[in-house]
Image (cartoon, rainbow, N blue to C red; front, side, top):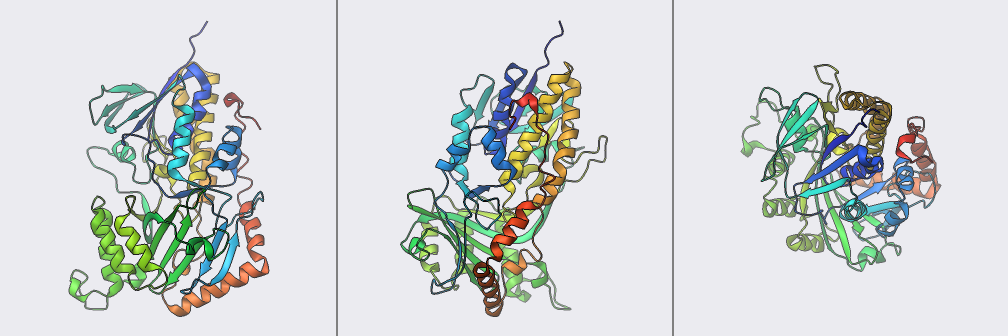
Length: 468
């Protein structure tokens, strides 16, 4: 009798993508041993809202998690566009139970709560082990195995597969993609949008304006906007997104002026330079707060309250929105999302940014496909040296079209969504008002939901026991 194939899998990142993959792989029992490595000392309690859409809903339902996720959804019933006097100019309610795409999803969930739910679900499983407070320091690949060395005191270990699920700026990806001691360029397609995210205590106006707990979007000249969103049920906290778009086309230097001389900068040029510097100095939170206070101090509306709350917020972080676009390897088998036996999952491999609303859904679908292909391989052979390479190739082949659609941006995004002038803001609000009042929002939502319907017909991996 032949010996049963068994995989040792290391997943780097304990957010949503990695633990979802671990949960699905755990269904293979003794065929798969999974270690989840997280550099933080515990699951991260902080994080902004993420949403769940389309085929991601189906996967969560098959995993038996849909009701649990519904219980931790934020109390957000839609999105309202407001002016400086808090007058609602357009509103887009959540279409509960309908197969439409909207500005808000029926499933809007705080990232930290979702990660905590997954942790509680899998922490005691016999074939899953969490390791906190550590990260990968180096990787060696040889003899159909991956030897991983760790940053802190932990013996090096061999794995059949390493999964980089540690986000857009994945450390694991950068290490695995480095060749001949030359680190690869960051695989980013920048969208020229910078966001300061944090949470503050909720005020009456956060609920009173729309009477239903909708998120609010306020636009100001200079391609600036503020998004306020209610947190989990209870209406105690409110998450704040201060967003500014600084496209290169707005920062072009006049002929004959040196781009290296800050004295000759325009306001937009100065803003872009300062924002880029703040992103690089990612640990300097006080400086980042001071920068956003300076950038938003004159926008009006409720900015005084929001900036005052930012000063004492403990969860502020700065994010520059960029899509991850990995290129195929120059070496055989010429895959884009993997190098040898190290593969990217979720934002590490194909981050679409918040503008699409598809980041978490892509990560979940990716976890399902990767686990399914590994399970199919394990069921058909006892040779683990063949299981992983075949699964990684199929993972990319099956998922690629879905990722391509998930990364699609609307025409003119983000510039058109962040007007430069007061007149442009009036035009945007007028258009949104017309769309919301005429029912076109529902029509557009149905069209958006139908996009890519063919690509969502993924294989039903019988080996996972998750058949519909």
